Length: 438
Image 1 (tube, rainbow, N blue to C red):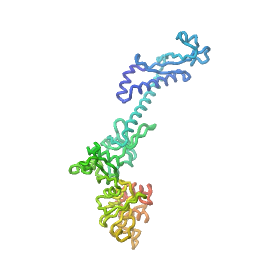
Image 2: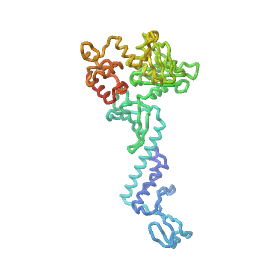
Image 3: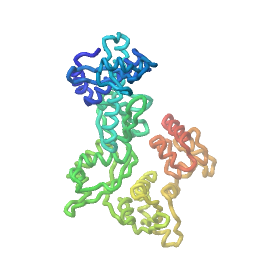
Image 4: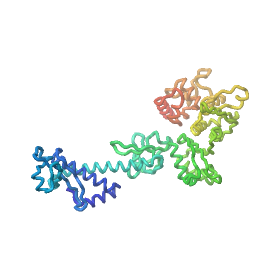
């Protein structure tokens, strides 16, 4: 039925990366299934590859009995002795089947089973290979686009870069080279699916590892990383060698190393700070470039009160609260901000990033449309004029630093959902309306 098996096994094994044992098992299973279909399921049949004859042999086994009741599974002692003089009652004797009895349909059935088995083996190899690469960067070519997802050709298999794992400011063309960190590997009936990400903090960490030899060699460690993909990121680094400055190693001569990372991230700004085991010192470093007067740590509630000079408030908070949000992600602590004036006057109140930003907006004379004395709905580009945005939503947006339609259009669904009172569907609708209105 199959000729020159050893050559087929060798060639397929080389092309597909499948071991000889797996291929032999696939062929044995295929021929066994075809034999059962041909000769009936009631018979006990086994398939075995014979290296000497370079063929797969089929054997039907029968039990030696005194009186035969089932000819398919039994043989009389008298008949058995003719085949094997040492036969005894209860023995199981194997009789070789003639594979030449197989027809065209039987051969086609066997080939289909072999193809299926080979595909399963390929999937298992790919699944194992990429499961070991979770958290590592892989490189592929953009193959096609499916409902916002990018399908990436990795050579042995395809990977998917879901829309939610893409940086909103990045765009790619078919055939373009693309990198991503392996986020997950799934194995289902459709095959092995490798999930990539360009937004996960580990992607940033891996890029630094590729660009900074000290990180690759373990001299410098990235202890923590936080990102708002496409906009800004912070990493906290530690040196295991007192002679090596971890920040300087990551920055490189004239910023060459960090610029290579920024280039890969399509312009995402990166703050590199010194790691500290002291939460207060880490928070102070994380809020840079703002100057911090002092930090009060509340271990019980895992929160900090940060006191800053009055003129450092906006710097500490950052654009749309970005600096303090990243600092909170990096440290893992809740961070609230006070100004020195409030502390000195004894009127200190906790300021969240959104509340502090709202105070800045109001101090600058920017009024929310709902507070206009003459009932004016605000300027043409105010968020209050955005389709589907009511007075309460507008107030929440302005408090969070989204004062204009352009501010909303330039953000993400995740940032909008973080605002109290705004769900995912509403955020998506607002983002679409803002982009249409620009």
